[in-house]
Image (cartoon, rainbow, N blue to C red; front, top):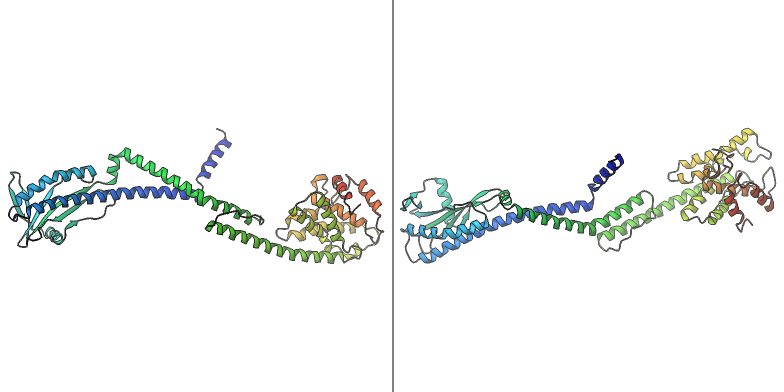
Length: 460
C-alpha cells in the first residue's frame, strides 16, 4: 500500500470519528439503549423477588384460613409440616425466575409472653423451640411484628445480594405473634448474563441496532438541517453575505434559519452603507485630485463610464461590474502624490518628472491596500499603465499576465486622454483616435478588448 493510500485511509478513519451532532445523537441513543437494558434487568430482578414474596405470603394465607379454627399456639409442628409442603412450590417458582440460590430454608418464630422463640425440627423430626437471646435479632423480629411483610432490602443494583423476608402470619383474633422468615438470594447481573449468554448477546445486539437506527433517524431529522445551517453560516462568516438559508420547516430550526437570513441581510445592508460612505469619500478625493488641473476635471468618472461599457460588452455579472467600477473610478487616486506643476506642465516631461508620474499607480495601490476587503481592486489600480507588449509600468507585465480589469481601464484611460484637450496638445478627432487604437492592437492594448470597445455605440 502506497503512502498516499495510507494517508487517505487514515484521513477517512479520523474524519469518520470527527465529532458531529449526528454522531453524538447516535452515540447517545446507543448509550441510552445500554442503560435501558440495565434497567430492564434490574426491574426483572425486583419484580421476580416481589413475585416470590407474594407467592410465599399467599401460601401462608391458606394456612391461616385452615388453621384459624384450631389453636396452634402450642402445636408448632403442624405449622412446620405445612410450610415444608408449600416450600416445594415456592422453590420451583424461584428456580424458574432465577432469583434464588437453593436450598430455600424457612424459619418459624413465635412470641410467647414477650419472649421470642425459634421453632424448628431437629434431625430426628422432633419439634424444638429455642429462645432468641441476641438483642439485634430480637429487635428485627419486633420490627416485623407490627407489619404484614418486612424486607431487609428493597433495592437492587445488579450485584449478588440476600434479602431477608419476614411475614406476619398471626391470626387476627389471637393474642400472640407468629412470624415466618426466609432468605431470597438475588443473583448478580453478570452471573445471569453468563448463564444466559446467547439470550443476553441477542438482546443487547437487537437493542443496539434499534438504538443506532433511532439515532440515525433523529440525526436525519434534526442534525442534518443544523449541519446545513452550520455550513451556510461558515460561508456567510467568510464574507459570502449573499448566501441564504433555505428551510421550509416551521419549528425552531426554521426560526433559526429565518433569524440567520435576517442577520445576513443586515450585515449586507450595513456593509453596503459603510462601503457607499467610503466610496463616496474616495470619489470626492478623486474629484479633488482631478480638479487640481483644469485639464483633468471629470477624467476618472469618464474613464469609469467607458470601462463599464466594455464590461457590459463582456457580459460581466454584478460583482465583476462592481469591482471594475470601483477600480476605474479610483485608478488615478495615486496622483495625489504628484505635484500640480508636473500635471499641468505644457511641454514634454523630463525623465525625472516622468519617473515621478509613473509612481502614481504604486502610490494608489498603497493607499487602497490599507483599506480592508478592498484588495480585490488593487490589480486594476496598480497595473492600468501596463502595455500588452510588456513595455509599460510599474512591473512591465505583458499580454494576459496583465489583470483583465487593468487592461480594460488602460483602454478607457487612454481614450479619454486622447479625446480631451491637454496643455501640450488639442483633443484628437474620433477618426484619429480610432486609427490610433487600430495601430496599437497587440502593442499597447489587448486586441480583443479594442474590438469590443470600438464597436460600442457611444464610441462609434
